[in-house]
Length: 380
Image 1 (cartoon, rainbow, N blue to C red):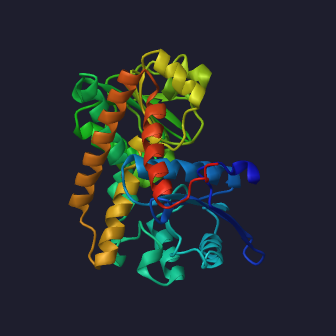
Image 2: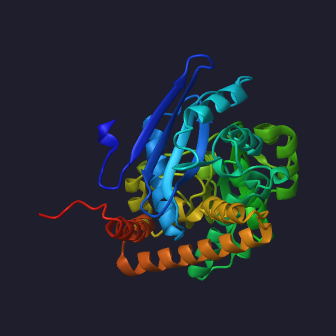
């Protein structure tokens, strides 16, 4: 456990369990120099403490990168989100963290959880302040329904294209993962005129160089989930992973972490990679892409739409008002477009990868806050 600790954190790692429900979970509060710990909660059968710690650190940089005053944190529950015991496990997890929530951490949504689960978490906390991403009927902002993260990914992609002197309407796109993030990304990019030529789910992929019908894909997703690829006929089927190899100007990895390693980075045909998932590429792969002249919008810039939405929702909560979706989308567009442009420009000027320059800027903000709070090590 101690190997997880460095100069930035984590400040607190809380492992919890419940013998009655079989719940096993962890909360990692990474760094709160800039504010209250805030990050999503994921539920998967394989989640680990190390995985959650990596994601919590990424949240530290994400909040700082978009210059919003919350701290990096993340939670994970080791369970099957499709199991009938989901609600009981979720309630048990929330109860086990009653000392930390909502004073030190606010629940959000991640892999395996939905707005309805956020409502359950809110019920267990016993007030509006313990969770965000709740349904509209509870005065919340339903992230997945609105597609805030995917919207931000598309806005970042458009800003990247403009920075390179390209027009999104003339570009083709391949999206790995057609869940909440990937689907919303496709919808917004299609609105901006891009041609979506490939998508994938856990059941395989689809490719049509002339373009996929995004509206039809979204309708099929509502009916069949990941099995939509088995019901869409106007495309060539792809095996898992082949979506990375199709000819497309923009690649959006929007599913799992650690999918782009060095070998794949050496062969990717895309001109722009916009990281919709958390931690999809390794540092070595990022360097390979940089050396090849491929522009990468880092995950903690590109997929920060969710944290921007969370900040707006939490501000509205404090005032007792319902969050305004129009204001949310405007804030996401402004924050992510500015962050993308600044990061890509700095990368070009400093001859460093976009991850390096964006992380350096985020670290400077966090370090300044730590210094002002007296949290830096004393000098001899």
